[in-house]
Length: 473
Ligand code: CS2
Image (cartoon, rainbow, N blue to C red; front, side, top):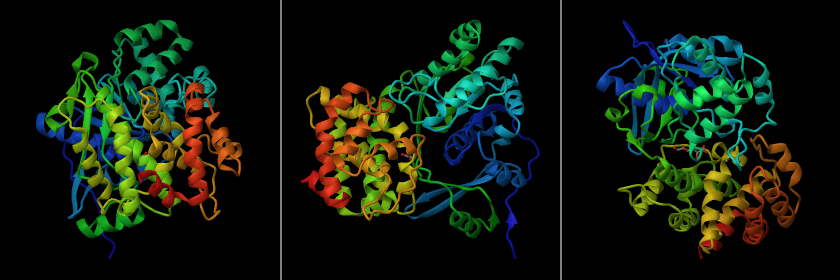
């Protein structure tokens, strides 16, 4: 007999206070859980309307469940389930952009949060500025019904301005450096091109707090859906699977100070997020990407498989030795303890986080994950052979063929360009990819040429497993 569908009897629900753009597994495993905890601890009308910017899948899966879903905490000792019930609706932007703008213009909505991935900000990864060559940005500048996330923010703020409603706080939750300032810059640039008075109003009244978000959340698989059915006896078409760990550092800068009581839910409300952000992007995401490219090339399917290989376990620890001098620890944090905890998180065998998933969109990720650290080390005269090997691993990966000569399914906005730019040789590929100025500023490319070529020569000649061993010797 098929299991019953997950469905909670709901008598009353909190009014909507948040519209979230980019309702993927991560935000449902992270932001929605914090908001649920905050409302449980301290109340408030912070129900969430989720928006999918592309596909209807999440909406279609959650609608028959009245928007409730199961959050599964994957501990090494077994899973724990909990139903999360903070969504009031899910909209699919391309189906009805006006409905999304209407939701964002509801005066009860005081926060618009985002997890739209790095590329969703339509910026130049090397500079952080709005990419004026982006087709969605060009479209959104001349149309009232937008396509891009920055377009939705600007057009909704424009409508609120015209209607005399205060702006919402823009709460970015993506892994970008100085993410608050970055989204503010992109929004102001776009607004200024539409109406300078609108840009002035946003600059004066809008708020764009920076955040550091952290919870490992692999994409949900069909097998996960079956596991949840076995655990709970109920069919949930869109559960989220995640690690026990979570950390949210939020700059406490909201329009009218209006926000859920995130501190009651365990978030850190701070004046300056930069140190948290740098530490997490460089120590976690930097090594995640390093393990993703090199682990994939060595034939490892997940991060836990990768660090179960002693050569990679030694390699990732070596990477942290190179990264730590380039990170200023946030108050009260010991970076060595942080690295040890990261290793345990990566090794959690219950988390099946595919190297292929993390390898996506590297052109948008490399600058904040690896290149900032490399620049800091170069400036200080420190060598970083393990991190240069990570960059070489990314190059080999995006060149599009694995070590057996089989094609790699590279997902990246620059995938075609990178594959066409790469050559058959290590030297040619390194030179060609370093010349992409969307990723590598020219001065950094010049400094990286020699050490990355050295790493690439070993990687191409001997393969990823041997290369990671050699670099740690
Ligand atoms: C990962 C992140 O997919 C990726 O690129 O590095 O999603 C990572 O799992 C999270 O940032 C952890 O908080």
